[in-house]
Image (tube, rainbow, N blue to C red; front, side, top):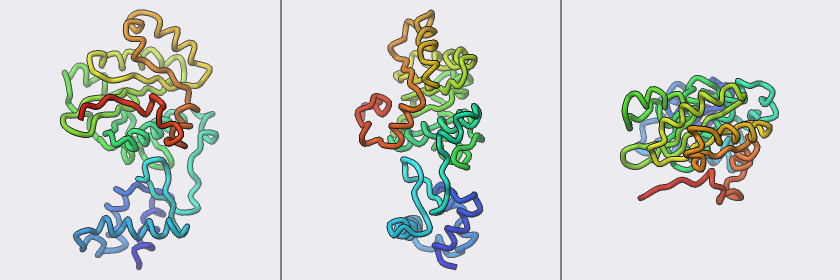
Length: 246
């Protein structure tokens, strides 16, 4: 069996799609000598990228180039999931994790078992455990925030808190979770259907959120998806900006 055939088998085991981590972990099942070379990972990537360049067998999925799929794999689209609240929630979480990875940040999700493009979010987020950056009482609440971005270098602190509000009934818990981080230098994003934006902004105009209203950004799903689909065209969008000091 060739390396190409082995990668195909790994992808088939995962319904046609997998992260590089999955491929690295499972390639030996089908190609036992895969890890014998010192630079085996680069060699494996080279084999896969060659086939992608030639439009054969594989394709890259997503913004971060960290997900590989079979050429005929059908990617999950927003129009396929928008009528299903649970699937839409995990779809947007996956989008936000991918964007965070693309920005070279560490990413965490409160829903590691939720699925996006047939992959559990735990395979897309780069952190399996929440960094212990503050008091346990705050961490107990913070770990339930949908998506968190952390700085990559040094001690890890939150740079972005993202909540997916798929119904107005989930807004209050989302705001209560995020406000626990008000003493940290990060921004708070609420992502929702366009029809909810005015209601959410009205809630942010009330106590206690009005005191830090300028730190909250409310965006509709489509605007974030546009960034995901073409980050270069939206490179100046504030969603892609975060403060860094080194």
